[in-house]
Length: 324
Length: 230
Image 1 (cartoon, each protein chain N blue to C red):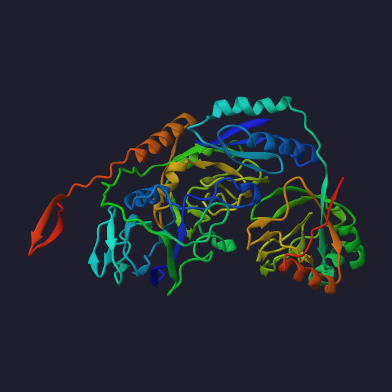
Image 2: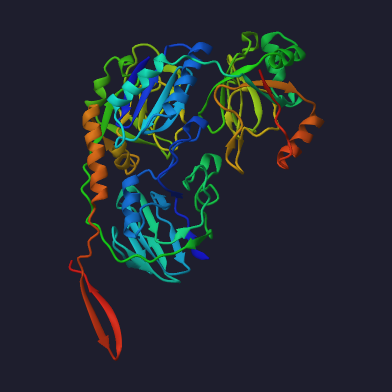
């Protein structure tokens, strides 16, 4: 059954889920939503614990719905509208056949997520529906959305209305020194300078510009496994953070890795933004992750609106009043 | 054996600073062992190190360190050697002449050298199904192209410096292409990879006619891959 039609694809919109951890020994990257937290929150708002969401980078997609369902929008603020009327992010939005979702433009962040209450018909590869465009696997035909793509649904449930008061996200990008950090002259200098995000940013990696990180000897190592968040430094001395679609093996010296929770924040950095890294040790990093998991588990899906049942001319209506 | 925390949920086990079949056996052994440890989510082997992803709600760095160090007591067992035969049409090697010119060997000698030995699959990585192979004769070493090609067809067999390999997918690349296999190292239709870490491959020369015949059989799922066990 048809769910929605893509009226305008946006710049780079792909379906993503939690990714495919467990197949890296076969060369498959982990992939999945770059901002996992935004994905999880969007899914909760449409009554799901997990499921593929649409990840839109820099520019929103325009969708025309063919059936009623609930959606929720999280992540970067791109000024979403339904039928040319502003709609709120971080809350359940009910859409009906013929409704058109558009985005006015990016205000902050880099990547926006749409979760759908219906289960979408997408390709599953290695237990994940995440799109990995490099090999054309997963998601919708293994590629980014194109104009007139028709996305079908295979099952539907309609959730109750819910909203999330956006949980606090601090702006720190925390790094655990590790890997071959002792092969740098002054590894700590990564914490003492501000780095700028270059124009070379995609789902595979993010090249930074700033203070050079000097190697003691060579910039090359025997090819070794990398993780999303690994900061590799080629001969140029300019760091590059490898992200969720990066190859599983790399051959450049690594100075350390951005902790996994902070990859969500990194996903919202766009070219020209600045980054200041903060050092953490393993114990702190584990505590940060555990706290994050707990926060997400206990998230309050509140419905703060006042609710009235009104009967007008014999027809009963459910009315919600939102206090601004 | 050296362990380092990489982030809050992954650690790197490193054995040494070189590449050898001995180290490979240790990596392989550790790979099998680590997969069975409670809380381990993904293990990625490479030449001399392994990445281990784990669930911090089930285990932690210190506990895993203890678990992983136990493997030292396990004997490295050399299991049966599996050799996968890879048919290669060397007539399709667009850079065969370049390799011949550089090495001073005739094209025939390049082919017989390349097909005359087995190559160990040290690891699969970089891209799905891409094998990092060891064992090429140093006589065949040829520098990469100065200007990489923007597209190399899937199945291309190449030499880049002292390494030989097979491109599983169409990608840009700078290796000297000496032939092409009709086999799919990564099958997009059922997302399967042909080779596994620890297996050996043997290149078998085939004519263009045989290449196309095998290609058809592969498409129709009728081709039976030849495996030698010893």
